[in-house]
Image (cartoon, rainbow, N blue to C red):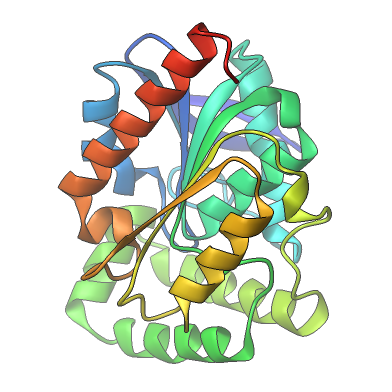
Length: 259
């Protein structure tokens, strides 16, 4: 296990493999454990970096998570890059981790070589999605599969972690709504948007992603017909193949000087 300090808190990270750096960012209420199998596969070609965002997984708990959670955590990930001596990396984020990843690309454009964003709702939170998430979590916390999953992700205090996570999602929606501090069209790196047409938490992911594709200059969209939330885990094998091919294409393009 390895840790670095961020605002005097211990933040967990781990690395696997060698090569170009690929940072994987977990979603809300989850942890880097969700990427364990994928990380092993990607580490055959890349230096995979996993992180537990402050307050989650094996990282030290935070009394009050920041309301502007996804923006603030972009700075956490960049600090880890600096600790590891990484000036640039590819970044993959799922759910809330995708929003963190996009914030990194907006705030630190020179540090992101390419980005994969999976299963996120666009530029703003919506009343519908927040209510749906809160309702589903209340049910899941009473059911064995939900309790087992969250305990595996976050340990014995999983309930407090999930409750705090839900609170900041609601508070962000009430006070801010917007996930980014810059226009999303300012993203300059290649972006692959992945999602599932049966996502429970994104009301119309097809039109959302189509609009994002128009606004992000160098972007592509992959939507799985039977994909749920998050798509890269419900369609894991296909996702890994697509992401691996996409990253290799970006590396080849850079080598040829076309990016």
